[in-house]
Length: 311
View 1 (cartoon, helix red, strand yellow):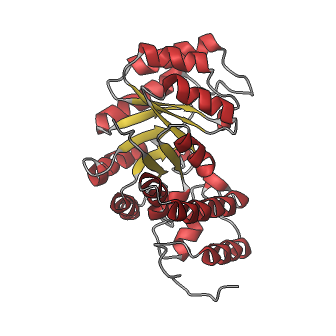
View 2 (cartoon, helix red, strand yellow):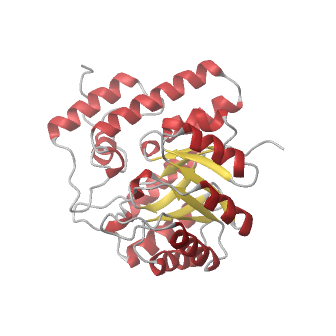
């Protein structure tokens, strides 16, 4: 059976000029992602500014995402790294009420630089997984300050059939290869970020995810379609542009969306504002970002709202 491959975009959450949730802009952005055929996470802690959402706003974001995406492209709830087990259980219950297709269990952050023990992690995942009937995705992310032990991942996958996949954000190709070798025949394995998209595919994984697709979701999708078609020239071009865009984004805040939202606005896309304490890049920095993006000649990118010459 052919392996299911996918590109997953972690959607932004647009806010209006007064800082409120901009539902019209959110629907427009989700529509762009839907039309590109990518899978979508919403309410994520990075690109989605999930930490800034009230419970009521979170629930509304989930509800809107289901209305716009469910049955058309996979729609998943991402959420934030919790300090307490109950926080993630509450998020799972909200995701289940919203009837998303799946939800991610973020790594536990117990605070003050401390890292959970393997026993604490196992208790955390077991409690959260058993609290929901939703398919769940695990996350082994450098932002947590640690990665999930492979033995633990394998035990959990063997114990719980509701685990649908895992995303890995590190740079250790050995870890990635062993992860795919151990569980890749039972669950999806994605790269959290485009950097390891090709290694994941080469090693037998399922694809990649990231926030860069908010600007050009079609570019995300084209990496997967080129790989599936064995079109190496198109793959080289699409992936090269994606990695160049990732490098630009990372220079100006990466998943904080400090540059991404203003960049989207510059091209007439529904970026909206950031919510305090996050602040956008300066006008000079934005001009640098826009010029760098223009030089990439990204497919599917609309004209600038206020055209500028390419430097």
